[in-house]
Amino acid sequence: MKLVIKAYWKNSQELLFQDIGKILTIVLLIVGATLSWIGYDEYRQVQESEYRLLEAHARNADVQVATALSDIEYMLGEIAQEWLKSRPLERKAFVTVLERHKKEIPELGTLFTINTQGHISHSTDPTIVGRDISQESYFANHLNAEQSPKMFMSRPDKNLLGIPTIIFSLPIIDINHRFLGVVGITIGFNFFPKVLQAINPDDSASMSVIFNRDGDLMYRRENPEKFFGNNITQVSTVLHEHRDAGTQVTRHIAPSAHNGKTRLFLIREVGDTGIGLILSRQLDEVFAKWRRNVVIYALIFLFISVVVILLVIFVARSRHEQREREIELATNREQLQKIKQQQMLSQERQRLMQDMHDGLGSSLTSALRVIECGKVDEADIMQILKSCIDDLKLAIDSMEPVDADLLLLLATLRFRLAPRLESTGIILHWEIVNVPALNWLDPRNALHILRILQEAFTNIIKHTRTTEIRVITGVEDDWVVVIIIDNGQGFSVEHALKNGGKGLSNQMRRAEAIGATIHWESNDLGTRLTLRLRVAGATYETHKNSTL
Image 1 (cartoon, rainbow, N blue to C red):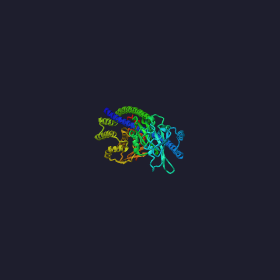
Image 2: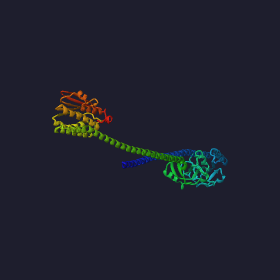
Image 3: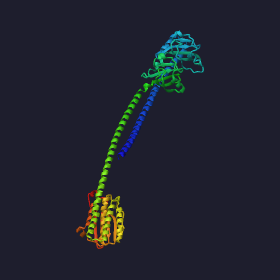
Image 4: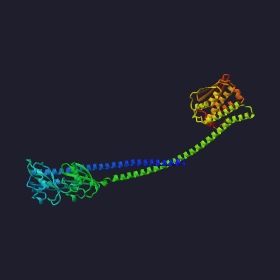
C-alpha cells in the first residue's frame, strides 16, 4: 500500500508541476504579448502623432514662405510698373521706393535695375551701378522670350555684394511685351528666420531647414548665418530619398548629417517655388515618454510574473497539502475498511456459530439423546441426519450474495427442498412474480428469511399430511409478500402459540428481527402462512445485535 501511495504521489507531483508550468507559461505569454502589443501600438501612435505635428508645422511654414515670396514678387512688380511710368527713376526716387517697401519687409537689401545689355543701370548701392551681370542666372533666366514673366530666386552667393545673399528678380515687360530689363532685390540670411519664427517648435530637439531646388541652405534653425548657402545635396540622404519619391511630402527616419543622431524627418515642397522645407525631431526626445511607458510595462510584467509565481507556489503548496490529506484520508479509510471487514468477518463467524449451535447443534444433540436412549430406529436416524444436512446447506446458502434479490433467495431454497418434497410425494406449485429489490437483504437477513420458510416447509412435511404446496409472491403497498399454502390438515394457531410451540415462536422472532410480519391462517382445508417484508423500512443495522 505504501508503494502504491508513493507512486501515486509521485505521479501527482509530476502532473501538478506540469500543470503549473503550463499555467505559468500561458499566463506570462498572454501578459507579455498584451504588453508588447500595447507598447508597439503606442510606438506607432507616438510616431504618427509626431509626423502629424510636423506636417501641421510644415503646412504653416508653407503658407508663411509662400506669403513672403508673394509679397516680394508684388513689391518687384510695383517697382517695375513705377519704372515703366517714370523711367529712368532718379536715384533719390529709387531709394524712396525701397524705403517705402522696407516698412513692410525690413529684411530687404539692395534694390537695383538691369538694362537689356545686362548692366546694372540703377541701384540703391552706387558701388554696383554699371556692373555687368549678363551671365548671372537672375538676369539670364529672364531672356527666354517663350517663358512667361515670373519672379526668379537665385542661389545664395556673394558675387554681387561680397556677402552671401539671395537675389529675387522680375523682368520688366511693357504693354507690347518687349523686354526692357530686370528689377532685382537682395535679401540676406535673416529673412527666412523671421518668416519661420512663429512656427518653430520651442524644444531643442526640433530642427527647421529651408532649401532651394539646388540643395542650398537658405535657412537652418541653428546658426542660420553660418550655414546660409551651404549645399546639402551630397550629405543629406533623406533629401535624395525625397527627390526619388517624386511626391510633395515624404517621411523619413534616418541619422542626422550634422551629429549622426537618429531623427524623424518630414520634407515638403512649397508649391512650385523651388523651395523645400525639412522639419525634423530627434528620435530620442520624441520617444522619451514612450520609453518610460515601456519601462513601466516591463515593471508591470515583472510584477505580474512574481504574483503568478507566488500564486502558483501557493496553489502548489495547497494542492500538496490537499494530496497529503487525501493520502492520509485514503490510508485511514483503508484501515477503517479493514477494521470493518474484520468486524464483519467476526460477526459473520459469530452468527454462523450461533446459528449452527441453535440449529445444527441442537438437532445433533437431540439425535444423540434419542440414540442413547435406544428409542429410535434406523429410518428416524436417517431423517434426523437429513434434517441436519439441510440445516447446514441452508446456512451455507445464506452466505451466497443475492444482491437484494428475494426471488434468487427463494430459488435457492427451492433447489434445496425440491428433492425432499419429491421423496415425500408432495407437489410444489411455484407462483412467483417479480417483486422490488430489498436493499437491506444481506446474508444475515437472508438467513432469517430462509429459516422462517424452512421451518414452514418442515412443519408442513411433518405434521399436515399435505399433498400440495403453493408458494406465491406479490406486492402490497410498501411490502413484498411471500405466501405458503398447503392442503393438509390444519391446526389451532392460537393453541400452538399459547402452549409455547418452538417452531412458530422462532419464526415470529426471526420476522421481528428483520422488521417483517408473519401471520398464519389454518383450518381443515389447509394452512396459509403470510410473510410481509418491508421494501425499504427495516434494515439489518437496526437488528444487528440480535442472536436468534
